[in-house]
Image (cartoon, rainbow, N blue to C red; front, top):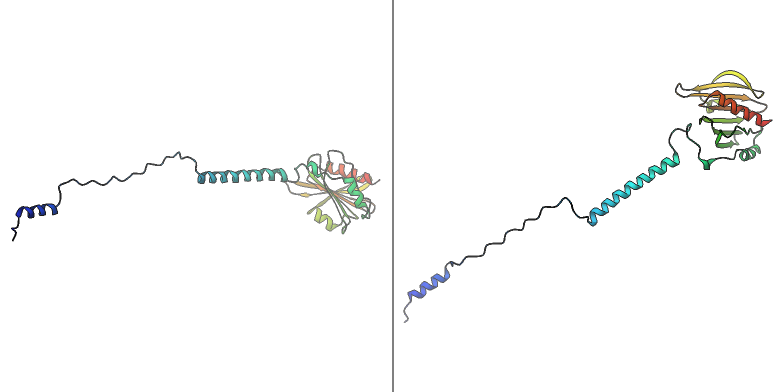
Amino acid sequence: MHERRDDDSDANREGSGPTSEPQASPAPATVPAPKSHYQLPTRKNTSLRNMIWALGLTMLIVVVVGIGFFGVGSDQSREPLPNTEVDLAQTAERAQESAPYPVVVPAAGEEWAVRSVRFTDAEDRWEVRYSSPQRHLVTMVQAPEISAPMLSASFPGAVEGEEQEIAGVPCRMLSGGTDDEPHTGLSCAGDGWGLLIHGATEPEELRELAEAAITSID
């Protein structure tokens, strides 16, 4: 029988116990660097910036085009566009083919700018709109007669004033509108036709246009 060696047992016990060698410590956690406020442009923020600039530029173009097309201010003070000029004489010739009265074509001068011309067959109504020398909107209406319904529709609230003669034709002054924007008019009765001229302007301009219109018939 072999004898048990105490030194072998002691060695085995020493080998199975904790060792005295130092163990490696864990690596320190990596701390993220603080973000800088001055970042380089990326594909994401560059695309967003481009979209904002494109949207702003588009809205600016729409505003500029809208102002250029529609203009600014009221109809009474707006200048007529050069490309919207109407050939009054040529349009009057076509209207004369249907009108039962001699169509007036006023030779009112270069300061009177024609805005629009229209002839309505159903009413035998000849209508011309002008910009007066004072840049006011003036409407001239010719029909077989200026009836009360036509006067009320064209010049609501008109009040008849003094009677006067223009180019040998009896006419009557009209007034209306508001205190801030008075409206004046002239109603003339010829042989088989009636003439109504009105606008937010001085009576002298209305008489000037009425005289040119009545004279054009002779």
